[in-house]
Amino acid sequence: MADIAPHVVFGTRMRQLREARGWRIGELATRSGICRATLYNIQEGRRSCALDIAAAVARALGTTIDAMIAPCACARCYDAPPAGFACSLCGVATPAVARG
Image (cartoon, rainbow, N blue to C red):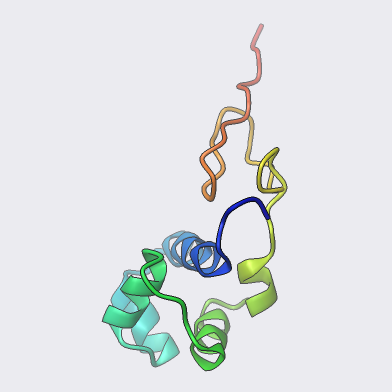
């Protein structure tokens, strides 16, 4: 994966999955058993996490650690965002679909 540290990918995906569920960070803390400050620092890419924390977070979000750190497929990172949107990991935008 181009230039993006795995702990940053993990934190970004953690935020995406948390927000997709409509959870605040406190809800994830309750469900994972990990304190909010730790989750916030992981989510912001300020710290990496131990395997047991990563497993607890992934389990609370209903996914796996592998899925949380899997590379994307955009031109830079390998995760094609929908047309007209930017990759949430690297910021590379895909062209908008022409209408008409």
